[in-house]
Each structure stands twice: as C-alpha cells, then as structure tokens.
Amino acid sequence: MNNPKELHGRNFPTAGQDALNASRPSLYGGDDSSYELAFTDNDFLLHPDLRPVRMQLELLKPEMVQREEGVESTIVVFGSARILPADESQARLRSAMDLPDGPERDLAVRLAQRQVDMSRYYEEARAFSALVTNNSAKLDNPIYVVTGGGPGVMEAGNRGAHEVGGKSIGLNIVLPHEQEPNPYITPKLCFQFHYFALRKMHFLMRSVALVCFPGGFGTLDELFETLTLIQTGKCRKRPVLLFGREFWTKLINFDYLVETGMISPQDLGLFHYVETADEAWATLQKVYGLGQPDADIACGW
Image (cartoon, rainbow, N blue to C red):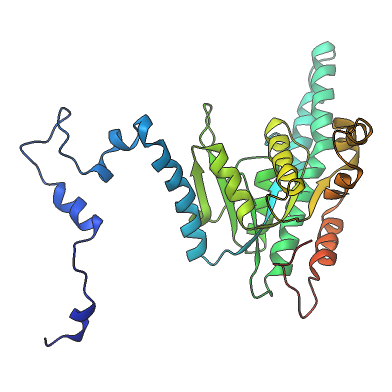
C-alpha cells in the first residue's frame, strides 16, 4: 500500500454521496414509487409516525451547530414581540397626534403613548445584550445572548449584541402567521423550530441566566416553565431576572400564592426584580464573580 492515508479511508460511501448517486433518473421514479432513499424522501420524513425522528433532529441540529461554533454559555432574553424601539414608538405617537380631533384620535394617542412607555424595555434589552457581549468577550468561554429570534424584545436582544460586533442566537419557530427572524441574529446561529418543547429545551440547555422582560402568553409560558424546573430541582438554579417590578407585580400576585400555600416563601427567592441593564449586569457579576480572575460561569447560584 503506497499511500498511508488509505489506512484511514472510508469503507463505505457517505450518505451524501449515495443521495447524489440515487438522484439519477430511474425506471422506478415518480409519485407512485417508494424507491427513493428514506432519508431523502420528504413525504416519508413528514409522516406522522416519524414524529420521534423529527423531534430528535430538532434536538440534534442546534446542539451540533452550537457545539461546533464554541457556544457553551448563554443568557436567555425573553419578552414581548410587540414592544417597539423608542424611535419607532415616538414616530407612531406623532402620527396619532396629527389625526383630526375626536374619539378615534384620543384612542390612537392613548395606544401610541402606551407603546412609547413600553419602548424603554426594548432599549434596556438592547443595552443589556451589549453589556453581556462586551463584558464576557474576555472570558475563556464568552456568554452569548439567545432570544426567540422574532421582533420586539427578541430583536432588541440580538441587536444589542450585533451592534458591538458580537454573535447572538435566535431560536425562531414556525407559526400560522408569517414569522421572519429579525435581521440581527448571527446567521450560523439562527435556527427554526417546529416543536415548542424542543425550542424551550434549547433555551435552557446552555443558559446561565434568564432575563425576562414584559410579555404575553409566550413569555409567561417560558418564565413559568423555567421557574418550575428550578423549583422542582429538574434543572440547576440560575438567576432569573424580571425587568420592571411594577409590571410584574401588577400582572402576578406572587405574595398571594404564598398566602394561599400554593408556593413556599422561599420560592420568592427564585427570581429578582431589576429596572435597568446596568442593574441586571451588576446582579450577574455578583452571582458569578464576573470581573474576578477566577470567575466561573459554570457555578451554581
């Protein structure tokens, strides 16, 4: 044997090579044929009985790509898709105020003013992601921001990282209405999901903290699943930061859950309120010793 490399050569063709070879015209091609390779047959892969395989693929693809890209630690940014950037919300308010006087104008102004008030959360999410990306870049294992990949607070999270030249992750999901990922996600780290459950698993698999901004049903679902997993010991304890005490205390009466015995007083320690990006980052610095020579973001909370 003249070439030592042949000692380590493949014994069989790759799946890609066979897929290419099998793409040649065949006597048994056509819609009424079962001759296509199983792993290139979309009708077969989308069959209801293949659901376990599809779930495994949605677990594996993001896992493999993130591992290849060196993503070990993330901070999850949750929040409403409906919260606008400050400049856009101000523009909408000006447009509403230009309407003719009357009930329609009053309603439009009231709704636009509410969007202006809520837009501070977009800007805080943007600033927080920039802080995370900039300040963790010097760590042996940088922390990457991960969002649901959509608009609103999710966009702000990816945007903040993008604006300081960092990578960020987007875990988008197919919805009945059109849902395009925001333009600030690192392309290699932009994923699309069919299963909510697998998407939520990926949110937590590498996370060292959860930062939750005001949001609706989806945000609440993600928040309470995380709190439940921590409370029951199904995942490690990690900081859960709720942006905006006034919003969260009006929305959820956590004290009433304690009063009625539905949760224990200690469960109120599973999360903390913060108001600004600086306060949130300072909390994480304290928890993980970030900025110290021996900082270890893999430690528990």
